[in-house]
Image (tube, one colour):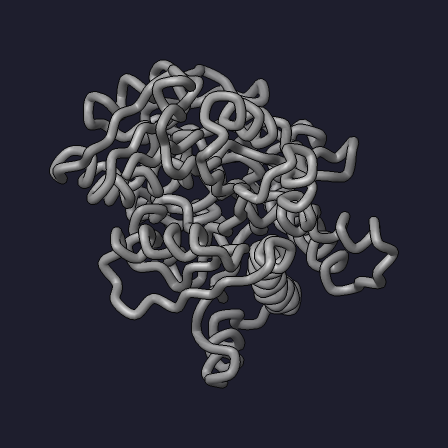
Length: 390
């Protein structure tokens, strides 16, 4: 079976590799560097499993810039292009998804299009109506940055927003590529599948915000946050997961998905309090962290890593970015250590390439997630990474 994938980010590349174990997969992207890297069996993103599979596994995978080459004769086309929340329109920007659908319909109208990009509730139905076809399906993705392929090989569940034979065929393709056995599979309506994605991520954001608020209380009152969290999470109904305090949730999914879900509520005039409070709580947490840094009267704040978490190369919407903005407004000197940035500056602050030099120049080191790299200057480090993980 030939499968085309549009978009070589976390979602697209991990799905392409998963399916290329047993199918012919052509991965279409607009970035020539990404295409060249993939065809050279190198990963354009940081993900240990993706790097390993590209280098060592027999994959029937080719990357291309050519839409015709990718989409022609494909049985399925997976759309994994980026969508982002647009604060001006108060909605996801889905132009890239719509462009791919339009192109596929022109080149190969018989292909079944499976949207993996995160989209607003009701989007799939609107695309079916716009293009007058029922061959557009939504299947949400539940991946972690840095572990995208692992989460496809060992999926928590497979959700497909359609109940047709094609939907069942696509779910089977995902199951065939997975290493985990007995994967739960759920077939739903398209709108329900879209809602599942947004509500799942919003719940996770709410949980992050809750434990961050707990940590804010503990730090403000001079209490041991770790003891409180451990005591709360020993309740098996709560559990010892997703409970490690941070500077705030960030990354590709949680910030935009919570805002999109809130927009869906507001659009329909449906009352909501928790979702709005979750977004506001995350803003308040970043402000609190920034204030704690300022209170320490540092001469030079050294920001250790911009990436949202360990094992990720993404700093989009990372909480530390807003904290740097706050410090900038307070005229505090900031230096940054981020080996994944080639530029010599970020947000007008110098990027120090040498870790030893960074440590020496920093009077206070701010780290969203602690690293063994900082063990020798631990007394300089400000972090809320209580459990030293995730």
